[in-house]
Image (cartoon, rainbow, N blue to C red; front, top):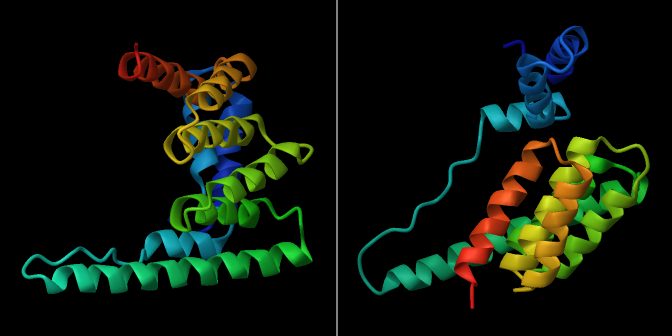
Length: 186
């Protein structure tokens, strides 16, 4: 409520420390993983930019949608360039590298470069297991959805299950593998 994600993180960590192995500790850890890293990111979350909805109507809709798409791509490029500038100053800036990976893969349709950024994140020492599991899961989804590489995606999901068996990401990975088995059977 005070707009201080660091204070919230400390309070939630206190729950984890005082009640280890409990459901409350698990829920507190999940919430910690969702907290923004900085007060600026918190303000962005509190005041999100509106998502433009397509207008219905005539043939001009396609032209308008095309222009919006170009604007979205320009905005994504600007954001990606800002991330690159920050990473030039501090290559170990985890939030910026993760943001760059998402922009590249999800908004600029450069999955290969996004996957490279995730690999760099996974190779950084001393990263929390929860983030590593999240990044591996994200890499698997990108392999499946953007590169249509089911085998590599499945291998990454199996790695999440193997390396982080008690995590929420492992549970999601099991479900995704089951979905893949049903969708691509035969």
